[in-house]
Structure formats: C-alpha cells, structure tokens
Length: 405
Ligand code: HSE
Image (cartoon, rainbow, N blue to C red; front, top):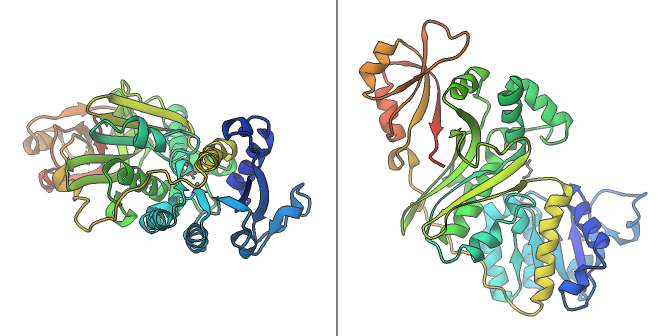
C-alpha cells in the first residue's frame, strides 16, 4: 500500500525510517500487504538523501496519485497543513498527523471532512509523542466517567525544571542547555510560555469530554517566572514544580482547562517524571488514577505513533473508524479562577502576622538564605479569586497552584 509523507523534518524522516526498518513486521499486521513510501513532500532540497527520487515540492503529486491511500502530515503549523489535509480527506485519502497546533485549531473541521468522505483522520502522535494516550483515552477508558486529567505535556519545560530542581541551575542556564541539546526551539516561546502544552490540553479535553476546546479558551501560564527560590521553598514542603496541563469535569455542559506551573507532592506519580519525559494522568470513576509515561517528543518515539496510525488506517481501508468529537461552544470552558478550589503556594514580602491576619490556615515554608522580610506559605483550599482578595494588602512575589494529582 502506497503512503506519502508531508514534511521531512525530525518526525517525517523518522516516519520513513520506521516504515523501512520494519518492512518485515508491518505487513504481518495489515494482512500481508507492505507499506511503501511513494512520495515525500518538502520544499527543501535533500540532494544526498537516499530517498531523493521520492521528493516533490508539488502537493498535487500526492493529491492526484490514486495509488496513495494514506498520508502522514508531519509538517507542523496550521498553514498550509490545514488546506492540504482538507483536500486529501475530501479526495478519499486517510491522513495521520503529529501536528497538535492544527488539531487544536482546526480539529472539528477536519474530523467532519473525514466523517463526510468516509476516511480516517488519526492523531495519536499529536499528544505525548510516543506515549499511547489517544487510543487509551477513547477506547480502553471508554467505560469511565473522566473526572480529570493532569499532564506533563512538554518535554522542554520539564527538562528545564528538572535542571533547576536537581542541579540548582537558573532558568536561563537550563534553557540554554535545552537549546544546545535541541529540545527547545531557537525561539522557545511556545514551549516556555505553555502554548505547546495548551494545544495538547485542547486535544485531550476534546477527546475526554466530547466537545472541541480551542487554545483561546485555555488559561495558559508558562514557567519563565519560576525561580530557584520557589524551587527551594517547595522542596522544603516535599514537592516539586511541574508545568501541568489540567482538565476538570464540572458538569455535563462545562469543563475547566488550564496550563500553569503547579506544585506536585513527591508521592504523586507525576513528581518522578523528569528530563524530557512526559506523563498523562487520567482519573476515571471506575478505574481510578492511571498514568501514561514515556518520551513525549523526538524523532523515533513520535514516528512510532505516526506509523501506528498509518497501520491502523491500512487495517481499516475502506472502513471508517468511529473517532472524533463535536463542535466547541463559547461558554463550555469555565473560568477556573472562580470554579476550581485548590491550595496555593504564595511567596510574599510580608511578616507571618500579616499572613495570619489574611488567612486562617496556612503552612509556612522556609529556605536557606531566606530574607527576614520574605514569607512563603501554602494556603488552605480556595478559588484563585478568593486568594487574590485575601492577598490584596500583601506584596506578592509569586503564586503557584498546588495540585491534588
Ligand atoms: N517542543 C515540544 C516539547 C515537542 O518540548 O515537548 C513535542 O511537542
């Protein structure tokens, strides 16, 4: 069966490599037929690549080839990936993707196009890289009412936080190493400011609760305000700081979804997720907590998920898999600041007496070198709006949510 790959970057070249490396085992999984990469779309030149005869710069070479039945979109970005994917689905080809930005922005339209043309649009690689999470969430956990999801969904930020926690490195130095190692982009904004994790939250929330969630509906805060002082205070409370994507069921018509740094206590399965690894913890009413862990990015791990989707499409040639979710709604995602109660870590320029006057029940923290006019503490559970009110007379240095996962 002929397939095409659009985008020959890290993931796309990994897809070609995995298909070729496993040319012996893949046919056994799809009824004997081999997968053949027939075309690779990329605007760049790869003169020394062994696949040079397969390259094209013209999308129509893939669209108009009736023998190509499945296309892997590993280009990234919304345009032109959206236009290409739409045309392919409408023409009767199935598409698999690692492109979380596209799924988060345009998922409903593309799933609808696949529905109408009887093709498949599969997205396993769009969240958690090589970690199986899309199928487990939609199939293996289908019998559960999902109460919430919490995920370490970005490898770059998890690497930076791990360096800060374990090596006492500053945010800036850790980011520099992440860039040198090729984890972070030259412009690391999407990773560091939480936008990449936000896109993955949109996809998980859409799958878990059945209505599309757009990035603009997810309050998103990155890790650039986290300092070694915060790391140290939270260490004294037996916890670590992680960039978490959190999704919570409110009622059948509303959910909460947000991305932010969060204190995770050391007993949590999420606390031990280090370096560039990702993990997604799903809380179901029947199953309890289940945690999916593994490499959340990288060439071969992400290609592993893309090629699995290709194999699934090949197994379902001419058949539509039941997969997807409905359109989004404006008031579907609530303002978590008034809807969700949790404890908070607060660092202030204040005295303990001033803090005690504002809060009835706090746990004070300490760190080496703590200035006499600085106080850090963990509050009782409350909404963020209530916290803001109580802190109105104090000079706040930093606030971090505390999670119960
Ligand atoms: N830049 C992303 C990360 C890649 O660091 O996790 C995978 O989405």
